[in-house]
Amino acid sequence: MMYLADWYTATATEASKIGFFQIGGGIAGDFPICVVPMLHQDLGRTSVPLWGYFCQISDSTTSYGSYSGAVPNEKITWGKLGEKTPKFIIESDATIVAPLVFAIVLGQ
Image (cartoon, rainbow, N blue to C red):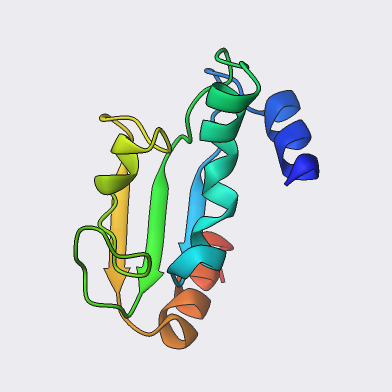
């Protein structure tokens, strides 16, 4: 987490925001996105921008208050995302969808 916090602080700017692509859910899947609230709330680095976008592949049933199925808008209340942050959720099996998304992003 310390490495991610240092890298994010040095790399993310308002002009060049960094997006967050989460595969799966649960505490382990949600842990890295917490770097931004940690920077803001615990370390006082309030000039660091929020994530530029959020996309999650999850096969969990969406519901408020769950770790695996929390809807992206719930992340606003925790300071992980902003109200205007583009948010996407792909409800499917990540072993099928992730390779397809990566192939499109990589132009293959």
